[in-house]
Length: 195
Image (tube, rainbow, N blue to C red; front, side):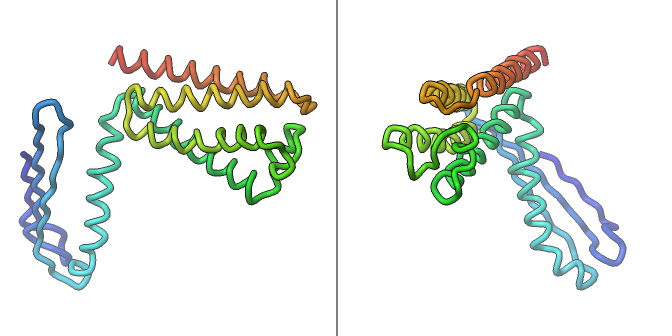
């Protein structure tokens, strides 16, 4: 545990400030950090700042600390999971609600005019993005499986687009992006091993 005290506090705002951190870990589980904070308010600002401090402390313990302690590979997994999740949602909205810009730029018809098999492939591509995000939250091999699934489906859809005669070269750019992502994963993994 760590107990940080400041009897003087912040002049005119608070005195007797205390932050007590308790770190615990049960066998074969992640460590948990608990924070107990107290102070004696000396002004209206000292009284109204409680919700801000609560949010600040929650973010520090639940977002920033785990991210700072994560290996480069885990940070990469979370980053790509978030990007793939956002892309999947964006592609879904473009296909189903919007003008199907991505499909028409690839030389295909808008989503509504596609056949059932092509619509299923497009929706599968959209769904694998959020799935990759969810798996990235689990970390490890589950996160890797989500990233690999997204990459294979993206390249697979590019193969289908070119086979359908969309008229635009989409396979090479899709494969190049996935090659860069794979190289980044390898680099992140080697950095984690060396650290």
